[in-house]
Image (tube, rainbow, N blue to C red; front, top):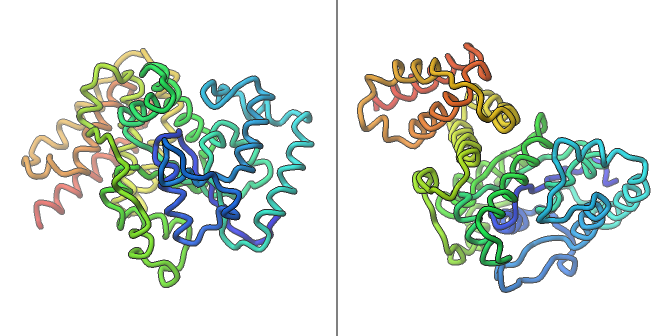
Length: 348
């Protein structure tokens, strides 16, 4: 295996900006493999997929052995145990040889293939020290794009989106990971790129924002649904609304930049499995009451800020899940963060 190199893996569902993110990393100096190995532009992705065909081939083999495919994902709760079976040992040896041949001498390399999300434990057994960037997009837009490419009805596409996001969160828990939204890459590129560059520890002097920004095409976005429109949509499953809202709020926490915000982001993300598998439990109004008391005096100009908006949505979701999932200390930290944000805004 390439010794001393840093490895970044892009995970997330297809049609959610994984290609845009991969191109961004390529322009920033991340080695994605030889040009001849990368998928060429296709009608559904005119800017190129930026997928190394070697990784695609391995992922397809793995999924076939599991009797699954890109649109029939394996159960993310079971796939790790399945992939630890000795019958996969020879394929893991082949994958190690492939990586040695492709990325020997690369100080920073990585790859993008949405299928990797589904079989990540296979690659983690070979590359245990990876970093991860999870690419996300408003599910309404992802489903519209997915349906246009595959002809799938929205219900099936939403189920696929859900499976990929859950697998990505479950398999990367406890590892260095960064969540980025397709919309932010297009609308707030400079800030998102700085976060990516810092996350991957890329020297700013070796990679200017201007150089990378100019390589990103913004004219290929055909849908743009707001978070509120997604929440109001009758087509989006309620559970997926909750999941997306949690992730959206967690990214707003990350943007705060403080250590406390980062710790809280990981705490929120750790709640996701419980949220997904405890649907229908009794409502817990205590968190909602705490929230209302904390923000009652906030003026409209504070309540309308993006950070405040995200936390408000977060609290609405978690009040349906149960405050017991969080614990009193974390609830108080949420309220404290919001209160400090409110005080800061009032004094500005």
